[in-house]
Image 1 (tube, rainbow, N blue to C red):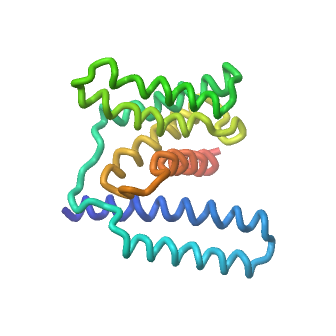
Image 2: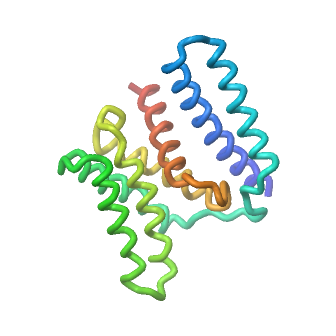
Length: 186
C-alpha cells in the first residue's frame, strides 16, 4: 500500500513539476520581468494545489495499465514521427492519420477488451510523435520519449480522472523527461 501511494505521489509531483516549469518558461518568454514571473508562478501553484486538494481526480484503488496496452504508446509515437518527418505530412495530419487508424482497432474484434484499450495508447504516443524536429532529433529519441510517456500512461491509470488533456499531458511529460535526460547525458 505504501509503495502505491509513493508511486501516485511521485506521478502527481512529476506532472505538476513539468507543468509549472513549462508555464513559468512561457511567462518568462513573454513577460521578461521577475515580478510577473513570480506572481504567475504563485498563482499557478496555488491553483494546482487547490485543485488537487478539493477535486476528486483519483480513484481510491491502485491500478496500473497493463504492459500489453502500454507497449502501443511508443509504437504510436514512432508511426506519427515517421509520417511527420520522413513522409513530410506535418504534425497535425500525421496525428490525425495515426489517431484515425487507431480508432478502428476495436472494429477488428468487437468482443475483445484488449483492442478497445489500444486506441488511447496509440493516441498518447502520437502526441509524442508530432513533436517538432528540433525537439525530437531522431527516431531513437522518439522511441525513448514514447517509452517514458508509456510509463507515465501506465502509472496514471487511476489519476486525473475527468481531466481533459490527460493523454497529451502524459506525452508532454515523456518528451520533457527525455529531453532532460538527453540534455544531462549529452
